[in-house]
Length: 282
Image (tube, rainbow, N blue to C red; front, side):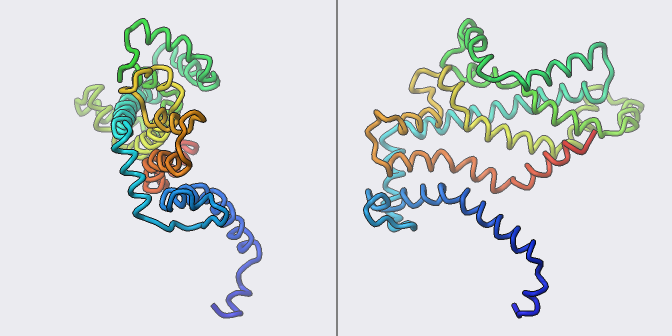
């Protein structure tokens, strides 16, 4: 780059790029330090002369292998993936069905019901934990996948997002489909859902990230080790009484962070587009 082209770059642009790079470095440094601790010889990253780069890939692989073979981490991975998959399927199905009715059709009490659902967004989760637990216990769903999944299937945020998208569907398309002989459910399947694909993908990604990182509800509902999620297993590693070394604790945390990191890196554009479009539609 020549000196003349450098003069053409506004100072404000350089400042914005510098600030963005600084924020990115601050955000990524904990992840890089975690990788550095895992892929290094035991005790090396926290020694008197620590290094900021991985020094032993085989040592990191050995730590990962040790956690998978000596603990129930693989079982917890399976429980967490099932928990996330069932929750995503339920949230998309229930949320899209409810949004279809709220956004495109008139019925008595529609505004009141939608307002009540939106008000639930202002209620802290801690307030509903005890009644939800008591109801789940009475149903006999403790230490079951149903107890994990069912209480989180109704998402007020998901309903709000999908309603914003479906309100933009022209009523003429609904009437044309009805005149062609399409039933109510066929209009939902063949008209509403295809037009809201972007919103459904965004909601699925956000639901996965929220479900994977959920710690409080699985801790309350799953007290048996065979129902532990990844968050609970990582909590055991992070406990002061676990007597685990720093590198093993970091390895457990790195393995827990990989799925949401991959999802965010792959689908980050969909997340931004979906949230931006949900705020402009309607």
